[in-house]
Image 1 (tube, rainbow, N blue to C red):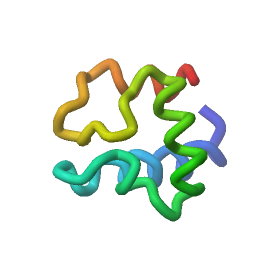
Image 2: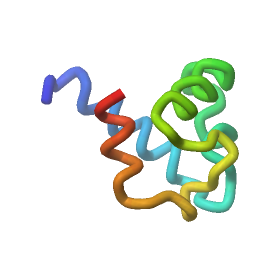
Image 3: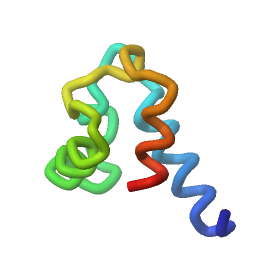
Length: 66
């Protein structure tokens, strides 16, 4: 993985899963913008209203492949 991508990916994961009881969309607010993330999550097959604690293990792989 490119070294410039690693900190970005790390920050994305930290924000998305830092507060497992909040929705992913709320956790990602301010990272790029909620409209951007709603489309991204939906395109990856993840409900933007889902909570981190409800996601399956393959969810992260769908993020990477997107």
